[in-house]
Image (tube, rainbow, N blue to C red; front, top):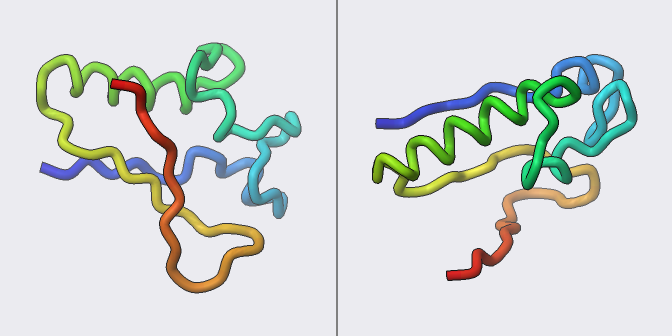
Length: 82
């Protein structure tokens, strides 16, 4: 089963912002503890990912999006402490 999440920053993208929302906050930097009132989309997606992981249903979480300076295909990730 695949769960696909659409663009989480439509207001920023519509205004031409690549990384930030209309409040000038980089949404990629609020995943660890998103405020549900300030970042409801990030809060909901994070909750869904954590929930699926607790159920044992999460195999991978892949974030696909464009980059302002990188061209072509590339892989960028972070490590997870085990």
